[in-house]
Amino acid sequence: MKKLANYLWVEKNGEEYTLIMTPELQDDVGTVGFVEFTENKTVEKDDSLLELEGSKTVLDLTSPLSGEIVAINEKAEDSPELLNSADPQESWVVKLTGVDEADFNALENV
Image (cartoon, rainbow, N blue to C red; front, top):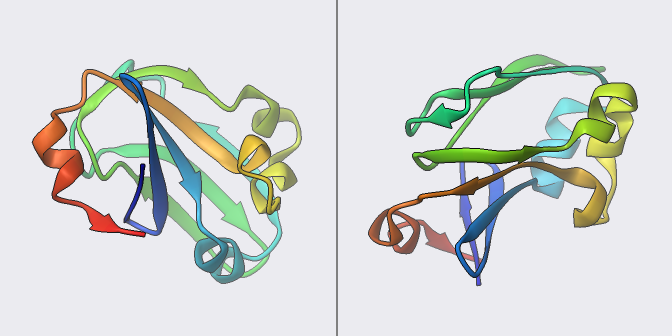
């Protein structure tokens, strides 16, 4: 199941929620040249996930959900342009667990 929030797709797979950059966000940002992920292991809704610098803008990408970060896209740290990929296996940002199901269900359907 996939939802939309904060220009991110939120894809649920069991107890894990993967946050993926949408094509709209990728277009707005332009070619990503630098990312710095949060060092926090838990995030609240609207907490920063990463600072991102693209060819068109610099922004602080925020989480649409509260939860525990169980994985970050480490490949994007070395190759930030992966976040511009149309392949969600490359353009994902973080993976969360411990998310409140009701909060996820309240997000916009894709």
